[in-house]
Length: 293
Image (tube, rainbow, N blue to C red; front, side, top):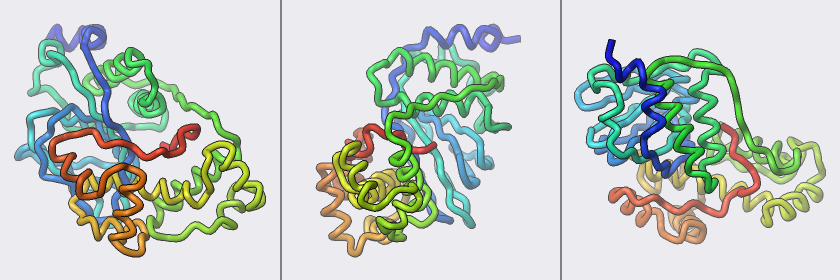
């Protein structure tokens, strides 16, 4: 048996890893992403919907609740579910001299299935997303090293970590916004509907949002749409006009103006910067509240 495989969980602890851009992308049925040349390591978790993942000349099915490890220097392409929405989490990272420790590339799995809700890969992934904006880079390095060891070995365990800081009404309201936008990105979310979901009056909900986020519920809805639109802008083949329509903006001009106000650059400029693999800035979005995974 290969000694690298035997000692993999221990050897990976020595890897120098730096975690970069991360997020959650939601696609309408039939969308695609790529072809692209991968510039950084990237872990993708298919949370909803199925996909076909192509790396080089090899295509494999990536069903719901599976993970894909994309490696730099290779060409890949995604075809998302043709009949239902697809939702996936992703994060990018750098590794220094990984091939001296990782198993032979010929032994790598293209896709690893998550077999239950308490699979360790899912728990580690949630932990990385939860703490991705923290200053504890060593914690993230160890999490990614552990996730890599589980991905290669196929071992799993139980556990879950999530950070909660906001009031219950804010948590419920924000979760409702994410669910509604994922279900129908362009549908309006009236204040009364949002307050009813949070079991408070519209006036009280506005006060809670102002105190916790320093913005109104309506602006929070708009920011979440822009956050989702930014991800689709960088990780799909849709035009800017199509993305504006998907997320319910009246015109491409309205979308571009709102986008530039929050991101500091136009949708076109951000898409062009992504070609050079710049990490885009994120909007001032829900800092006390963790987006639902």
